Image 1 (cartoon, rainbow, N blue to C red):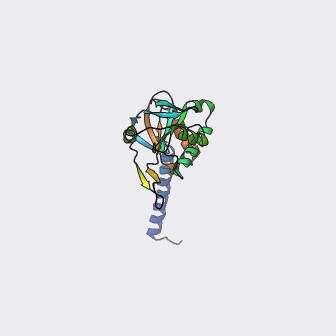
Image 2: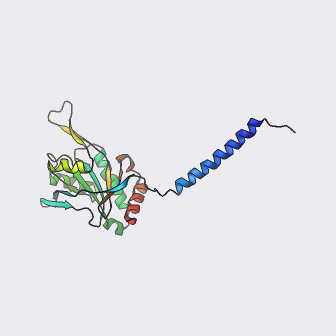
Image 3: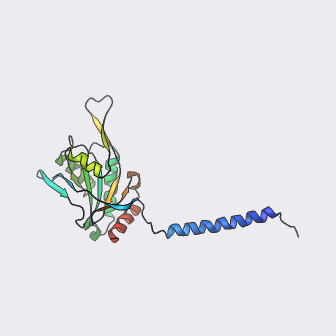
Length: 211
């Protein structure tokens, strides 16, 4: 009988322990009480109301988003001249909405607030959001816009475009905030996460189901 060196047996035992620990880790991850895909607030924060102008099809009209009105809301700040992040975010959110049941759709909305009120009129915002689906678009003028952005920890700044006199884009925070039916900010997604429809939808359903 060939006797194995002690270190071979020790290595085999160590590998067995590592496999066992890996299985336990995987199980605890699957059973985690922290089920969200997005970044969750440690303590849900009160969502700030949004007051501005929206397009009703026959001109601008006052609009107010009152958190806690019984509807789960995905809130995104952007601008209509945005070349990539804004249109992708709205398109992905519409894809999530389309994947919902009719009852879930009635209890969910997407709210788009423009960070470029000088160029984004209520009519322009309305045309923009309708292209992507059922989002509600809102123009908020300064200085109310700056106060609203601070309330959601959203930063934005005009960035002149080289070689295009007077033209600019808006560099801004790309997060989408999920606000529950009680008016609390529960989590946020970065725009790079929004393309995973199934996981974003799971987050929305989890928030809808938990008080």
